[in-house]
Length: 640
Image 1 (tube, rainbow, N blue to C red):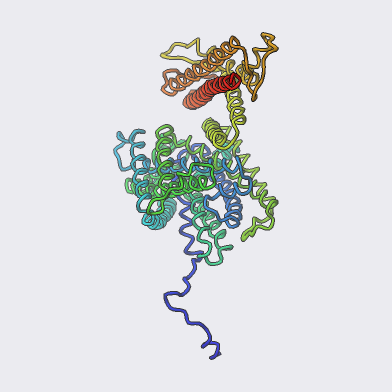
Image 2: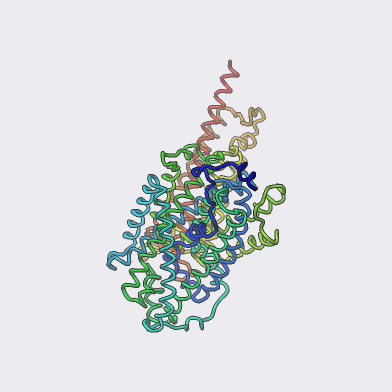
C-alpha cells in the first residue's frame, strides 16, 4: 500500500478535478424552465373556458408534457447540438421539414416573449389607478420592460442569469404562499369561498380545448431553452444520462402539482358561478385575476403581493424567450437556412443581430396583436405541431440511425411517441371548437406558409416557388368564397348595408380562381393556337412570337398583372376598414359576442389574400420584363 501511495501522482490543489453538478443543484434551473409567468395573464381565460374542468385539463396537458419531456430527452442527449428541437428535426428529417420546425419554434418563442411582456404589464397594473389601466398603458409598459431586458441581455447576460435563479426561488415561494393562505384563510376571510363550482356540469369539448390552450402555462418555450443550456453542460453533470431526464421529469411533475393547486385554490375562492367574485373577476375580465383572487382573502396586500410575484414570474419568461429566440436564429444561420449576419456576436458572446431582430418582431407582435388569448392560441398551435414533428423525428431517427448513442431511451417505443402524436392532433382539432382557437390555427398556418415561401425563395427552384404562389392564390380565393358563403356574411357601415360588398367578394374570388388558367397556360402559349400561327418557335422554353403577337402578349400580361395588384390593394383596404370597424361584418351563424372574432378572421383573410395577389401580380410583371430581355438578346444574336 505504501509503494502504491508513493507511485500515485500528486495533483496540485489548483488542478484538482472540479466537483460535478448533481440533481439538486440542477433542479432550480429546471424549475425555472417550467414555472413562469403565463398563468398570471391567462388564468381568468382558462377558468372562463372550462370552469372547474380546468383541473382535468391541467392533468391532461401535464401528462402529455411528461411524454414530450421523455421524447425531448432522448433527442437532446443523442444530439446535443445548439438549437434544441430544431436541430433534432433537421438531423432526422432535414430540408423543408427541418427548416419549418426551426421557423415554428422561433415564431413560438417570439409569441411567448410577447405574452410574457404583456403579462408583466398586466401584473403591474394592480399598482396603477383603475382609470389609467387601459390597453395603451399595458402596451407601453410591455414595450418598456422588453426594451429593458433587451439592453440587459445585450450587455450583462451573466448577471441577468444569476438574478433569474434568485427570482425563481421567489416565484416558487409566491405560489406556495398563495396555495397555503388561500386554502387555509379563505374559508374565514372570503365570503364567496366554497365548493359550489364543482357541482357544475363539465363538458368534454371545453376540457380538451382548455388542455390545448393551457400548454402555454407550462412555459413550453422556456423549458426548451433551459433544456438546451443543461445538455450543453453534459460533461459537468454527475451521471448526466440519468440526471438530465430525471431533473426535467421532476420539474414538470412539480409544475403540474403547483399549477393544479393554484387553480384549485383560485376556484374555491371564487365560489359559485353566481358569486360577486366570479362576476367581477372572471366575467369582468380582470387584468390580474390571480392577484384579485388573493385580494379576496388578504385585501389590498394580497393584490399587491401577487402582482409583484406576477412581475417576477414574467421577467424570468422574458429572459428565456429572448435567449432561445436568438439561439434558434443563430442555429438556422449556421445551417445555411438564414443569412450569416445572424452569426455575429458582441464582446459578451451575445448573438446581438439575432437578438435585435427578435426584439423588433416581438414589439411588432404586441403592436398588432394585443389580445393575449389570440397570442396564446397561435403559440399553442405551433407548439403542438412542433411536438408532432419532434415525435416523428424520434421514430425516424430510431430507424435511420440505429447505432446512434442514446444515453436515454423513451420507454415502450414506438407506442409512447405514437400516443403523443395522436393526442397532439386531437388537441389541435379541439381548437376548432372555439372561435379564438380556430383563428389561432388560421394565423398559425399563415405564419408557417410564410416560412415555406421564404424557404422556397432562398433554397428552392423558381418553378417550385411559382407553383406554390399560384396554388396559394387559388387556395386563398377558394377559402374567401367558401367562408363568405358558409357564414352568410353581411357588411354594413354607419347603419346602412353595403350592397356592393358581397358581389365584390365573389368577383374577386372568381378572378383569383380563373387566373389559374393563365398560370398553367400562359398568354404566349395560347396566342399562337388562337391565331393558328404555325411559324412560332420555342427557344430555351420561351415562345417567340411575331411582333404583333408579342405586343398583344405583353399588354395582356401587364393588364392581367395590374388587375391582380389592383384587386390585392382592394383586399388590403377591406382588411384595414374591417379592423377599424368602418366596415362592420355580421353573420346569423356568429353570435353577437363573437363579432370581434369575425372581424379578426376576415382581417387576416383579406390581408393574406391581398398580399398573395399583389405578390403574384408583381412576379408576372418581372417575368414579362425578363422574357422581353431574353427575346431581344436572342434576336440580336440571330441577327449577328
